Amino acid sequence: MSKTGSTPEQRRAYRIALADALKAGYAVLKDGGEALDAAVAAVAVMEDNPLFNAGKGAVFNSAGKNELEASVMLSKPPASYPGIPSSRRGSALTLLTRAKNPAKVARAIYLNPSVSPHVFLSGAQAEEIGASLGETLVDPSYFYTERRWKEHRRGLGLPDTVVGSEDDLPPQGTVGAVALDVRGCVAAVTSTGGRTNKLPGRIGDTPLMGAGFWAEEWTGPRTGGWVSNLLSTLGLAESKDTTRAVGISGTGDGDYFIRQATASSIASRMKLAGEDLEKASERVIKDLYELGGLGGVIALDDAGNVSMSLNCTGMYRGVIRDDGVPKVAIFDDDPLEEIGM
Image (cartoon, rainbow, N blue to C red):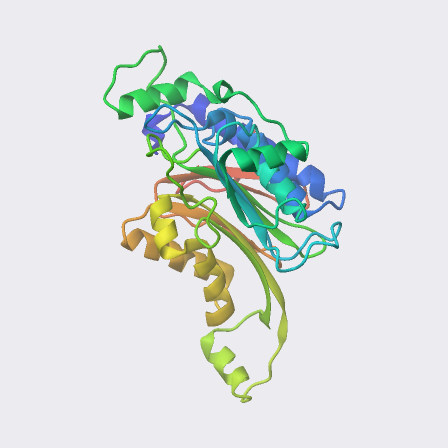
């Protein structure tokens, strides 16, 4: 991604789209809604927008097909579904070809353990379960866009079969949202079309717990490092344990996220090394880069701290807090700003 490879009009289109997604999630939270529902609402907006590599904007694999992935994960079960056990941490789906909104299907399956007790499902069976729970299936042709088809053709060294601009600003990975509700629940929702011209059947980090997404709750000190943690464990310092939670959604070189367990590593550094959210995120994303992986994460803890660490030239990102004002950014040196500035 580079500013020279895009126009102000294109950048503004993405900023508006990001703001729309943030506002959709905020509309759920401001009325006391669940974090899961807010994150899904935000992601569904991006799945419906061809600008993003998810849902309608999904890329093609090397066989000219769309294979989609999505996941949801929560730090604790949603309060409005008391029957869901705390051990049911989330739901992940891959190799979808007909789910209009993969994130909504992942949510529906998570909320219905009696229909599917499994964590990870794929293909037609997952979609049929989603349909039985009221989610929409579409013909695979729904996912066709000229822009993505051109990317597919060019990537294979074939001539374009449609006319259009080649200097746009295509997203290279995944969409996601992380939300915190008034009950202290943190939910992470992620959705993607994968990598352009990936091999058929390739599974990325988006549906793999710990790699491209993670959410967790634990009891421990809110501040301090490994020294204070050790002293507390040895009884040499007063322990001030409290309930903590975090949610992470990643985008980038998925194969590296898988090998590095990127998302769960952030939570582990917070829990075991006593690092704050920003330090843990920055360290893990730096490690990713040193091994050759490009990408970034959006992360949120139960105190409302936000980290949007990246090791590349840009990542579409934004935040909305209780004032209801969406702030977004694209490139690595962009500050978060309101739309219309």
